[in-house]
Image (cartoon, rainbow, N blue to C red; front, top):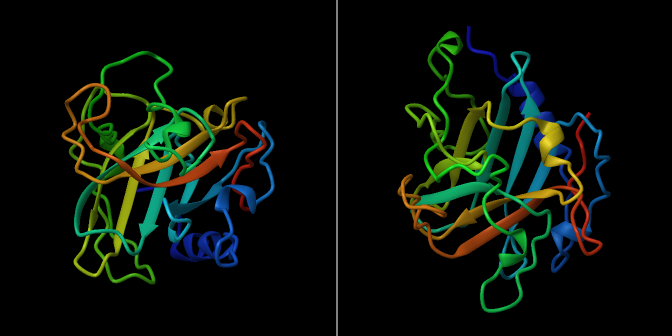
Length: 224
């Protein structure tokens, strides 16, 4: 049986994300999450110019898997690599914006790959209605191996909108709230799901902190 968040929970969770004033840094606008917090977490994604380009909700499933749901707006059409990165710092400055997020979250030292295969008892993924008129990108079929943070690609339509919904068993919410924090990063190009270490997915075009990070940067607010 498919176990996902209900529409009411998803909409309520997304509504709980902070509304930022123009020019406000999303990573400095929300209070820090406790390292022991069970989530779910809300993530505010911003581009290199500080514009809000999306939100994400990361929550625990009853079966022990983690559900990641991402909605974006204003990105270029096509597929974009998306990953959980190892540090909770989203600094857009410098020659390589968001390099502060470090590499892909990869505590086991595996090779880069695609998102995980869904377990057979979860059934067929079902589209969840959202305020955006975009078909979610689903996480199946996927790969048996890959970094813990490998989430594959998010597909963006011609109107700049895209939705990704994926379930993963490669990390738990507590892993995202370690001392270094973690972040969600979207890249300019598609992830080829093969090339190590980044899937040849190009520049980092959007970033949002998931858990408490370094340098005084803070985390997205746990919801509920």
